[in-house]
Length: 114
Image: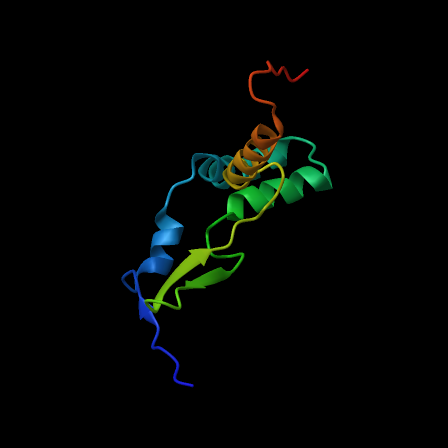
């Protein structure tokens, strides 16, 4: 069986691009959390969440490789933290949840979430 050569879809600078891509919440945590934690009492759970958010999609949590078998295109993605407090990670999860709930609705009936 012959294997296809991996052809990168992006220039080799892709790893540096992950570090330079801005995520406002991550940037705030990277810039200000250390000073905040020095002057305030922080629980271990809060420290863990802050670490996860500040390292999300920077590459320090690792990378994933997506590979298309039909065209041989490979793309590198920085891992996200998947912390439940991280808005960058939870936005796609929220959309999946909303779509799942929408499929459960009955057409023509009003729905109110209380």
